[in-house]
Length: 267
Image (cartoon, rainbow, N blue to C red; front, side, top):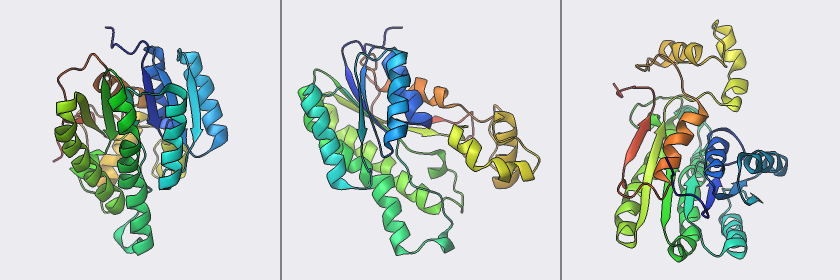
């Protein structure tokens, strides 16, 4: 299936690793030129090599602190200078986890700056470029925890719930302009950083943090959140859904919150 990305341009925030990188690689393989925004220069350069190898005609690795409004605006200025217009914005940034008793006011403000306001600022900066293009799409990444609460993710979940609301609202305001806006809610996804960060935690419980079946068994045992497929997902499975929603081929899906979670039912 031709998704219609040939000759298009895309920005993926958080595109240097995990789900963001997987999405950037799929867009590249489909023929899009891709700008990736993330903080670390080394990670950006490594990601740019992978995205270029996937087939992107042009890759722009742009170092941006996504909690800094001025840095975000400057990043999109670089996109404007390079391309003049933009077809796709995919926003994947999120804050760290934290339980309620661990979070003071500064931590809450930081969470919303990164988890919600980074998207608001990115969309604000991207809109003139999207409006200058022949077609435009926005996809944000929220989380299945917005419908399936966990005390360990209280600020993270609150920011992602706000992001989902903003995304839904944008679909209504931008629909008349032909800019389609959707939200993807990943379930438990095994990324390299997930595996590394939780290696000891899962190992202590007798599980392998790189095995999607072990990961889901641990999630069910620890949080009571099973899924119908009995395994965690992969970044590539998020990327395939996101790519369709972000594509020219998608002409009629907007305002959707799409769960990619292995069949959790949010019970």
